[in-house]
Image 1 (cartoon, one colour):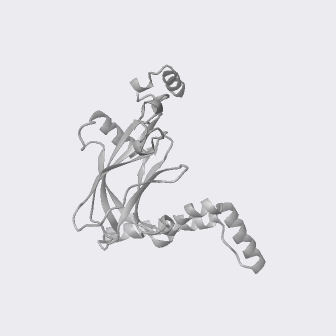
Image 2 (tube, helix red, strand yellow):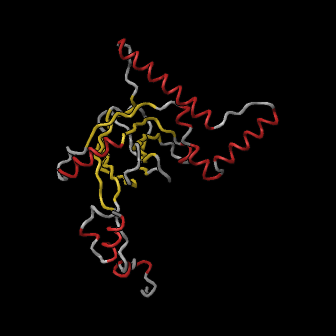
Length: 246
């Protein structure tokens, strides 16, 4: 498929068959409801496994009713190898992005995403198809703090940070758990919480733990290309025109 796309691109026909070329997963954010925070918030979306930072939406204000998200779109690289699409609602602190913490999370399995993509492709002009309401569950604080590792790695790679902690632990006689040990403990705790939630549901003692609901449409769209020579067709901004006389 990549060879076909490369050939069509070379002869200038790739735009005629966009489904053959590189594509991205477009998430259209429609509305949010039942928002359980009084702070401003925004959304982050990414695929797992995957590299790079998540795609961020603009900041929204909470409301007692539904929040209009303005059909804002987030585009994620999509090769078909992802296992999940992760969507976070993040509380906006108003200062550094690294201090913002996620308050809600939903993981959409790739099998579900592919189903929604097919719906949207068959009914491109009907917003009902390819769109689902997703419930974002509350994120525990220790899980939310893991988000800051993304920004830490930009300054100090995780393997260096772990090595420093291990050295300090060895010198002081303390056991510093490795990242693998922490991940295993986290997974065990998550499994226990799931069993506890299921038990509460059966016993009728469960309560709503979601932070908000969001309506999202999933589409697979052609990736935009920078066409050769296009730059020469775009006018220079008048206020920066070096040949303009003032």
